[in-house]
Structures are given as C-alpha cells and as structure tokens.
Image 1 (cartoon, rainbow, N blue to C red):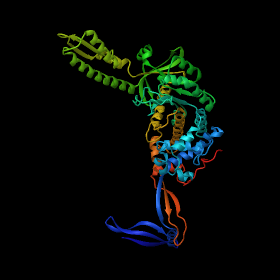
Image 2: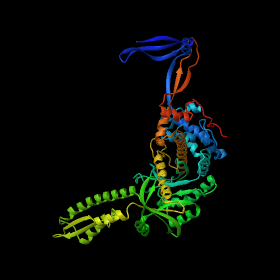
Image 3: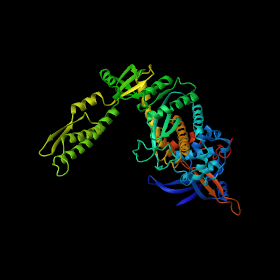
Image 4: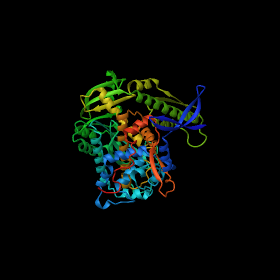
Length: 575
C-alpha cells in the first residue's frame, strides 16, 4: 500500500508517494512520485486538476511548417497571382490553402474533401495556426486552385527551388532526370482533359488513362529542381526533347552557369538529334543500347579489365570513340544485377513458351476430325509466331515431323551453346557515354548509378502513406497541373527536412520512416477545470508527450521541444 513520506533537504520539507516493495528478498521503500513541497502541492490543487486530455500528431506538421516559413512558400505562391485572383476564402489566402494541401500530401495523402476529417483534425495544425480548419473542404481547395494560372506554376517552382539552393547552400553538381507515369480514374469520355491518355503504364494499369511526370532532382538528398506534367501517351525521348530547353533555362536561372553541372539521363531519352543538342549545351552522362552498338560490345569483350567502383569489383572497358558523329568517352561494363535479371527473364519466358508449345504438341498429334486439314506451312507460322512473341527466336530450336493423316509430332529444346554465348558475350552489358573526357571509369559509373536516386524519388511519390501523387480527383488540365505543384511542394519540403535530419543527426532510414516517426511525436493538451468557488474559464496547457532518445535528439534539433505553438506564416493576408 502506498503512503506519504516526507524528507528534509536544506531546510525544506519535501513529500513523496512511497510504496514498500521487496528488492532482492528484502523490503525496501520505492518512490512512486515526487510531490514537492506542501505549498506547491496545495497551489496545484487550488488551480484545478485536468478535466480533459487530448493529444494530436504534431512533429511532422510542425517541422514542415517551420521549413515552409523559412522558404516563404505562401508569399512566393501569392506573389505570382494576378491581383484580381488574390481573394480570401474561409480566412486563407490562395498560397496558404495550397501549402496546407501540400503538408497534407506529405503527411497523409487523401482527397481534398477528406483533408480535414481524415488528416487535419488529428494534427496540431489548428493550434499552430491559431485558426479553425473545419471549413476547408473540397470546394475550398478547388476554388483556391482555380485561380492559379498554369503559366505561374514554373515561376513559383523556380523561386522555391532558388530559395532552397540558397538556404541549404546546394552547390551545382550531378543532376538526374527521369520520367514516370501515374494512372488515373478519369473517364474515357471526359473530353475536358488532354493530359490523361492511355499508354504503357509502369504499374500495369493499361486499362486506365494516365499522366506522365518528368522530374529533375539533385543526386544528393533527391531535392526536386524541376517537374513537368505531360500527356500519358508520349514516349520518353519525345518528352525529353520538348522540355530540355526548360531544364537548361532552370540551370542558368539557379546557378548562372552550366560549367559545373552534369546531367544524367537514361537510354530511353536518347536520339541522334537530341544527343547532339545536349552535347552542345551541358556536360552529361547517358547510355545507349548494346543492341544498336554490337561492334563496340565485341571490342569491349576483348579488352575488359577489372576495376573497383564503390568497393565493388567489375569488368569494364574504357575508351574514346565517335558515336552518332559525336566525340564521346565510352564505358562498357558488366552489371551482375542486370545479367542475373536478364537470365531470369529468359528462363521465365522459356518456361511460358514451353507450356504453350506442349499444349500445341498434344493438340497436333491428333488428326483433325472436321474443318480444314493442317498443313506444315500453317503450323510453321504458328510456331514461329509463338517463339518471336517471347523474344526467343535464336534461342529455341524446334523440329516438326509428319505423322499419319494431318497429325504432326513437335519437338523443341534450348540451344545451350547459343545460350552460353549470350551469357558470356552479350547479357549484362551496359554502354555509358559522356562528354566528360577527363573522368575515370569509376566517376562515370557512379554518376550513372545515381539514376536510381530519381527512380527512388518516384517511388516516394507513389508511396500511398506519404508524398503520394495519388489519389487525385481532378479532371481538367489546369487542376491537374496545380495538383502536381502541390505534390511537388510537399515533396520539396519533406526532402529538405530529410536532408537536415540526416546531416545533423546521422539518421540512416528512409524519408517515409522519418515522417512516420515525426508524426508519432504528439502534442498533449490538458484542459483544466477552473478554480474552486469561481466562475473562471477552463485553462488549456500543452506538453509534448514522452518520446524515445533518438527522436528526442531529432525533435530538439528541429526545435520541436520548445513548445512554440504558433507560426509566423501569413496565411490570412497578402503581402
């Protein structure tokens, strides 16, 4: 049973709640709680005890708001609006509404209609803004998005990126470019949207209309420098050609010079005309298909040497030659990951083909009972079509023997000698090209490997829990473009946050993990009853809930522990 005990220290009497427990078999007093001095305890009792306790997700929204305040996101958006568009809706400027939507995208992607009920009401945003958010429904966001002209999107993005480069002191270096697509549920008969088109979808949703997004990010920290949304049925090389000038202009605007910039892009963006234009404009690292440069692969196979790239040994060939009338440095190397993937793909295709061939074999062993008779020529065309559809024309060998009437016996097998030649001479080869003639093999390969970082950025944008572009319930081009801007603002804020945490605390997990753990930092609100025998109002005080040691360091670095429950972002006024 717990009891009250007192002890004296330096002339003061302190009270504690103590319980007797056995420690190592012997009774010992264990202090359950320190109550302090009698007068302090009496003061707390007179002021009232907590009447209610509420807690809200706090860490992620507070950290993102702080970065948005530094970057002047709201002021930047509002600056590029026409004067007659600078309206106040439900107490918020257009820039304020778009920022709140972007924070929602970063923390918990949901529809605009569900923004408050599914996200904001469970966070400390209202406390930080000192404003009610309950009226921010889908109509509010649609009205605010409607006044943002498409022509202003690139200007808003450019100003925000320039602010990030200055504040974070990002130096020019290797920049990575890639494209991806995002399926939508826009109806096929919707004629108000030209962006959503059917095309080859990377998520296998060829039955739906899709949007394409071009993304340019820094090699380190994946900071987005430029995005373009395009029609979902366009090829990568077409998009790259259309927007390359925009990329060059963005480089010049931010860095002033192209001298220290290296652009990295994949072989899907290549064409003879485009590569010549890139070579004349900026340093680059790209790739070309081994299928179109077989002589170069054969030359490389005769002269491969062992090199070490990022502590990995590999076979590579380094030379300087002319490709598409351009003087380029070329690296041909064997990628073990690509090699194993290609072998696995071939084996899977062979297994599927042989299943079809066995079904055909059983079928043609039996003479036809009705209809036209089988012929060798017709069966030959059928077999060749099956093999070609799997890309195994030179690898699978077959033989067709005639049986009585119009029956046939089909036999087939893998040409093991040809398969061995493929593995030893062709599979796993990558051809990298660059106009950095003084770069080593390691520098060229590492720059190209950075391409995985922009693919990782797209992976984040498809993460359903944080930063996702989907769901998007907009069906006009202008709304879709503004929605993409909102998503990219959320992504930019999150990656700046991630960069700071990694650099200052050594955090080694993903951006998704960081946002999850920051969201778990909660702000508790204690609502205390008024003093006795008075008609005073209920008093609310806030405290950060207890968090683990690692997150305490991160929260302290981000300034989340000083209980600054107000932001200075001008959400309600145009400046």
